[in-house]
Amino acid sequence: MAGIRKLELEEALVLRSGWRHACHALLYAPDPGMLFGRIPLRYAVLMQMRFDGRLGFPGGFVSVQDGGLEAGLNRELTEELGEAAADFRVERADYRSSHAGPGARIVAHFYAKRLTLEQLVAVEMGAPRAKDHGLEVLGLVRVPLYTLRDGVGGLPAFLENSFIGTAKEQLLEALQDLELVEPGSLTAWKVSLPR
Image 1 (cartoon, rainbow, N blue to C red):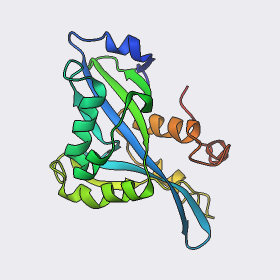
Image 2: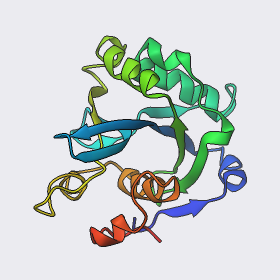
Image 3: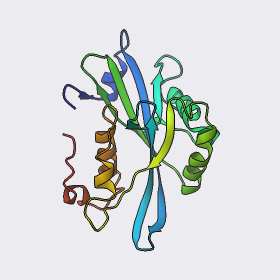
Image 4: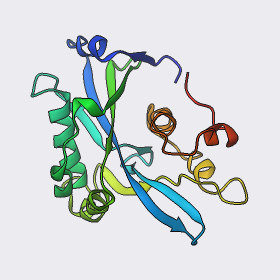
Protein backbone atom coordinates (compact mmCIF):
# COMPACT_ATOMS: atom_id res chain seq x y z
CA MET A 1 0.00 0.00 0.00
CA ALA A 2 2.86 2.34 -0.84
CA GLY A 3 1.74 5.94 -0.97
CA ILE A 4 -1.80 5.13 0.20
CA ARG A 5 -2.83 6.79 3.43
CA LYS A 6 -5.64 5.97 5.81
CA LEU A 7 -8.05 8.83 6.54
CA GLU A 8 -10.71 9.47 9.11
CA LEU A 9 -14.14 9.70 7.48
CA GLU A 10 -14.55 13.40 8.31
CA GLU A 11 -11.17 14.14 6.76
CA ALA A 12 -12.07 12.12 3.64
CA LEU A 13 -15.44 13.82 3.17
CA VAL A 14 -13.90 17.28 2.80
CA LEU A 15 -11.94 16.09 -0.24
CA ARG A 16 -14.30 17.26 -2.97
CA SER A 17 -12.90 19.36 -5.81
CA GLY A 18 -10.87 17.13 -8.11
CA TRP A 19 -11.39 14.05 -5.93
CA ARG A 20 -13.54 11.02 -6.76
CA HIS A 21 -15.11 8.84 -4.07
CA ALA A 22 -15.58 5.09 -4.36
CA CYS A 23 -17.45 2.90 -1.86
CA HIS A 24 -17.17 -0.87 -1.55
CA ALA A 25 -18.68 -3.38 0.87
CA LEU A 26 -17.66 -6.71 2.30
CA LEU A 27 -20.85 -8.75 2.71
CA TYR A 28 -20.70 -11.60 5.20
CA ALA A 29 -22.95 -14.00 7.08
CA PRO A 30 -22.52 -16.67 9.74
CA ASP A 31 -22.28 -20.07 8.05
CA PRO A 32 -22.71 -23.23 10.15
CA GLY A 33 -21.60 -25.43 7.22
CA MET A 34 -18.79 -27.94 7.33
CA LEU A 35 -16.46 -28.59 4.39
CA PHE A 36 -16.00 -32.34 3.87
CA GLY A 37 -17.98 -32.82 7.09
CA ARG A 38 -15.04 -31.73 9.25
CA ILE A 39 -13.80 -28.20 8.45
CA PRO A 40 -16.04 -25.48 9.93
CA LEU A 41 -16.81 -22.67 7.51
CA ARG A 42 -17.73 -20.17 10.30
CA TYR A 43 -18.67 -17.33 7.90
CA ALA A 44 -19.44 -16.80 4.24
CA VAL A 45 -17.58 -13.73 2.93
CA LEU A 46 -18.23 -12.45 -0.60
CA MET A 47 -15.81 -10.90 -3.03
CA GLN A 48 -16.12 -10.52 -6.78
CA MET A 49 -14.02 -11.13 -9.85
CA ARG A 50 -13.81 -7.79 -11.62
CA PHE A 51 -13.68 -7.00 -15.33
CA ASP A 52 -9.89 -6.53 -15.05
CA GLY A 53 -9.29 -10.02 -13.64
CA ARG A 54 -8.63 -8.82 -10.10
CA LEU A 55 -10.58 -9.57 -6.95
CA GLY A 56 -12.41 -6.77 -5.17
CA PHE A 57 -15.55 -5.94 -3.26
CA PRO A 58 -18.85 -4.90 -4.80
CA GLY A 59 -19.38 -1.16 -5.11
CA GLY A 60 -18.03 1.67 -7.21
CA PHE A 61 -17.79 5.40 -7.73
CA VAL A 62 -20.39 7.52 -5.92
CA SER A 63 -21.29 11.19 -5.68
CA VAL A 64 -20.89 12.62 -2.19
CA GLN A 65 -23.51 15.29 -3.02
CA ASP A 66 -26.10 12.82 -4.37
CA GLY A 67 -27.61 11.52 -1.13
CA GLY A 68 -24.29 10.64 0.48
CA LEU A 69 -21.87 7.74 0.38
CA GLU A 70 -24.25 5.05 1.56
CA ALA A 71 -27.00 5.95 -0.95
CA GLY A 72 -24.47 5.69 -3.76
CA LEU A 73 -23.06 2.44 -2.41
CA ASN A 74 -26.52 0.87 -2.14
CA ARG A 75 -27.24 1.88 -5.75
CA GLU A 76 -23.95 0.31 -6.87
CA LEU A 77 -24.68 -2.89 -4.94
CA THR A 78 -28.04 -3.27 -6.70
CA GLU A 79 -26.41 -2.70 -10.10
CA GLU A 80 -23.64 -5.24 -9.45
CA LEU A 81 -25.46 -7.82 -7.32
CA GLY A 82 -29.08 -7.59 -8.45
CA GLU A 83 -32.39 -7.07 -6.73
CA ALA A 84 -31.51 -9.15 -3.63
CA ALA A 85 -29.19 -6.30 -2.64
CA ALA A 86 -32.26 -4.06 -2.32
CA ASP A 87 -33.46 -6.25 0.58
CA PHE A 88 -30.85 -4.75 2.91
CA ARG A 89 -29.17 -1.35 3.31
CA VAL A 90 -25.56 -0.58 4.01
CA GLU A 91 -25.61 2.19 6.61
CA ARG A 92 -23.06 4.55 8.17
CA ALA A 93 -22.83 2.09 11.11
CA ASP A 94 -21.29 -0.43 8.66
CA TYR A 95 -18.43 1.96 7.76
CA ARG A 96 -14.89 0.62 8.37
CA SER A 97 -12.25 2.86 6.76
CA SER A 98 -11.20 5.34 4.07
CA HIS A 99 -7.97 5.45 2.07
CA ALA A 100 -6.58 8.03 -0.36
CA GLY A 101 -4.07 7.20 -3.04
CA PRO A 102 -1.20 9.28 -4.30
CA GLY A 103 -1.78 10.41 -7.92
CA ALA A 104 -5.27 9.34 -8.93
CA ARG A 105 -7.08 11.56 -6.38
CA ILE A 106 -9.46 8.76 -5.41
CA VAL A 107 -10.80 8.19 -1.91
CA ALA A 108 -11.85 4.58 -1.27
CA HIS A 109 -14.43 4.07 1.49
CA PHE A 110 -14.91 0.57 2.88
CA TYR A 111 -17.93 -0.95 4.64
CA ALA A 112 -18.72 -4.38 6.10
CA LYS A 113 -22.35 -5.53 6.26
CA ARG A 114 -23.48 -8.57 8.22
CA LEU A 115 -26.34 -10.43 6.53
CA THR A 116 -28.23 -13.58 7.30
CA LEU A 117 -27.05 -16.62 5.38
CA GLU A 118 -30.38 -16.59 3.53
CA GLN A 119 -29.79 -12.99 2.39
CA LEU A 120 -26.25 -13.77 1.27
CA VAL A 121 -27.36 -16.85 -0.69
CA ALA A 122 -30.12 -14.76 -2.33
CA VAL A 123 -27.44 -12.28 -3.43
CA GLU A 124 -25.33 -15.11 -4.86
CA MET A 125 -28.29 -16.59 -6.72
CA GLY A 126 -29.52 -13.26 -8.10
CA ALA A 127 -26.14 -11.82 -9.10
CA PRO A 128 -26.06 -13.44 -12.58
CA ARG A 129 -29.21 -11.42 -13.43
CA ALA A 130 -27.72 -8.10 -12.24
CA LYS A 131 -27.27 -5.22 -14.66
CA ASP A 132 -23.45 -5.28 -14.46
CA HIS A 133 -22.99 -9.08 -14.47
CA GLY A 134 -20.70 -10.13 -17.29
CA LEU A 135 -19.55 -6.54 -17.75
CA GLU A 136 -18.04 -4.89 -14.67
CA VAL A 137 -18.54 -8.04 -12.58
CA LEU A 138 -17.52 -11.47 -13.87
CA GLY A 139 -18.76 -13.40 -10.86
CA LEU A 140 -18.89 -13.72 -7.09
CA VAL A 141 -16.56 -15.84 -4.99
CA ARG A 142 -16.61 -16.87 -1.35
CA VAL A 143 -13.41 -16.35 0.59
CA PRO A 144 -12.21 -19.66 2.11
CA LEU A 145 -11.70 -18.90 5.82
CA TYR A 146 -9.81 -22.11 6.59
CA THR A 147 -6.50 -23.78 5.79
CA LEU A 148 -6.32 -27.31 4.45
CA ARG A 149 -3.94 -29.90 5.90
CA ASP A 150 -1.24 -29.03 3.39
CA GLY A 151 -0.97 -25.58 5.01
CA VAL A 152 -1.50 -23.88 1.67
CA GLY A 153 -5.01 -24.66 0.42
CA GLY A 154 -7.81 -22.37 1.55
CA LEU A 155 -7.15 -18.80 2.65
CA PRO A 156 -3.35 -18.85 2.13
CA ALA A 157 -3.84 -19.86 -1.52
CA PHE A 158 -6.72 -17.40 -1.98
CA LEU A 159 -4.51 -14.52 -0.82
CA GLU A 160 -2.07 -15.28 -3.66
CA ASN A 161 -4.63 -13.90 -6.15
CA SER A 162 -4.41 -10.40 -7.58
CA PHE A 163 -6.50 -7.83 -5.68
CA ILE A 164 -7.50 -4.32 -6.74
CA GLY A 165 -6.18 -1.36 -4.72
CA THR A 166 -6.49 -1.90 -0.97
CA ALA A 167 -8.96 -4.82 -1.21
CA LYS A 168 -6.55 -7.42 0.19
CA GLU A 169 -5.64 -5.24 3.16
CA GLN A 170 -9.31 -4.37 3.75
CA LEU A 171 -10.18 -8.07 3.70
CA LEU A 172 -7.47 -8.97 6.21
CA GLU A 173 -8.36 -6.11 8.57
CA ALA A 174 -12.05 -7.02 8.46
CA LEU A 175 -11.38 -10.74 9.02
CA GLN A 176 -9.38 -9.90 12.13
CA ASP A 177 -11.43 -7.00 13.52
CA LEU A 178 -14.81 -8.68 12.98
CA GLU A 179 -13.40 -11.98 14.31
CA LEU A 180 -14.44 -13.86 11.19
CA VAL A 181 -11.45 -16.18 11.57
CA GLU A 182 -10.09 -17.85 14.68
CA PRO A 183 -8.03 -15.41 16.81
CA GLY A 184 -4.36 -15.66 15.90
CA SER A 185 -4.98 -17.66 12.72
CA LEU A 186 -3.81 -14.87 10.40
CA THR A 187 -0.51 -14.80 12.28
CA ALA A 188 -0.32 -18.60 12.20
CA TRP A 189 -0.80 -18.47 8.42
CA LYS A 190 2.06 -15.95 8.25
CA VAL A 191 -0.28 -13.40 6.75
CA SER A 192 1.01 -9.91 7.36
CA LEU A 193 -1.62 -7.41 8.41
CA PRO A 194 -1.52 -3.84 7.12
CA ARG A 195 -0.09 -1.19 9.41
